[in-house]
Image 1 (cartoon, rainbow, N blue to C red):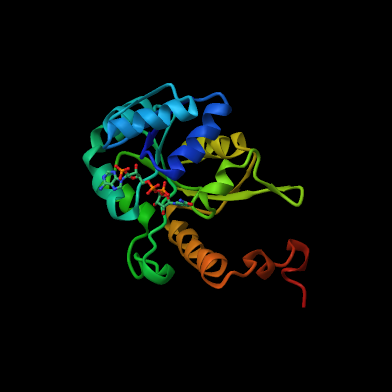
Image 2: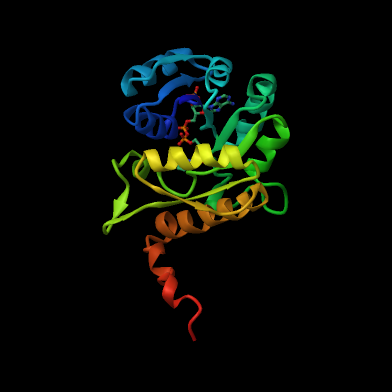
Length: 214
Ligand SMILES: NC(=O)c1ccc[n+]([C@@H]2O[C@H](COP(=O)([O-])OP(=O)(O)OC[C@H]3O[C@@H](n4cnc5c(N)ncnc54)[C@H](OP(=O)(O)O)[C@@H]3O)[C@@H](O)[C@H]2O)c1
């Protein structure tokens, strides 16, 4: 499929590189076209240019790989180009001390959806560090990484599940876009534990067979 990427940073490189390897046509778009060109060359993308060009190119999906603070404004400016597009939001609205910047308000994903009401927003890929998304494939202890996806549009969800499987992961349906805030809050919690406390956050979670047993 044709995938446009908004952003030229770490997540754009990690996920864009995986999707190129999976056989997709990837177009890197950024406010700095020079950086877009460098990244496109590095990952073997089909093209590079402005964010608008990436939004127009991505008739399969468009990845928003921008800081939370910039996402809604950039996406809002591309509203017309993003109409009908599957817009994948990997953003984490985190501030100082792993604080959730959206506390008490709409999630980052919902803010993107409000900024570009015609786009079909799906939350995914925000829980893990970019180095994890570079692994080919991200498998730990023989188990492929599970990726929660949240969205309201079944067709868009099907596209994102495919993009998840393409990098060797397993999609987990985590509900509608209204639940994206829970995934963002989970990222705040996990990153605080992994990075802030330096502990193994995975150890908090029992195997599914044990979850409801007394
Ligand atoms: N890095 C991770 O491990 C990771 C993991 C999970 C989720 N995330 C989330 O993924 C998103 C992207 O993270 P990243 O690590 O890829 O960030 P990054 O490496 O800092 O790249 C950010 C990109 O956004 C662009 N940008 C910044 N401000 C902008 C603005 N006002 N207008 C237009 N473009 C702007 C930057 O352009 P310039 O180069 O021109 O500044 C750059 O291309 C963030 O929301 C982050 O929370 C990151």
